[in-house]
Amino acid sequence: MLTVGEIWRYPVKSLGGERLETAHADERGIEGDRAWGIHDTETGMVLTARREPALLFLSARLIAGRPVITCDEGHDVSSDDALSRWMGRGVRLRSAADGPATFENPMNIDDESDWMQWQSTAGTFHDSRSKISMVTRQAIADWDARRFRVNLILHGDGECPTGGEITVGSAVLSIRKPIDRCVMVSRAQPGLAKDLTVLKR
Image (cartoon, rainbow, N blue to C red; front, side):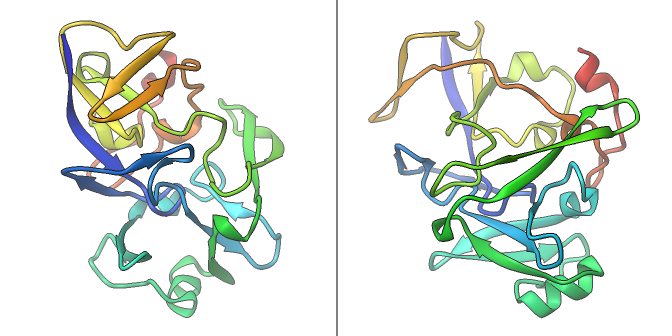
């Protein structure tokens, strides 16, 4: 039997997030999850840790509906000016409510080449139609869960369902597909070294 062991929300795309005791979910996923992104004012794209690994050393939590962003050293870098200084480029915090964003992903993960672009759906900065992600603690094995940026970590015996519907609290979730993982899960993060074996498994 599987039960929900941890609930996580990631207010800003590619940044570390916050662990929650309870969460509200709707058709866009967990409320406030991937609702913001860091917009590169020169390229017009919303940055991800695929292109900008430094993002993994920032973390965000929601306070009164707005992200509060801190760097690995604990400093608040929530303002556009502070974020731009920390990133070393012109950026601004952008809400997914302002419309779809363009992202990048390397098709060749070995040398991180052959970059492709795609657009998010309206109202969220999730990579795909999968709005709530989950994984079992057993599947993660010895890896730190922070690598995977999942919303639900399931504890107990068994595997994640691959179809149908499941009930989590008072929410009914439709299982759509396994999650395609990208190079981001192998990147270094606070306290975690680069690990290419993650994608290989």
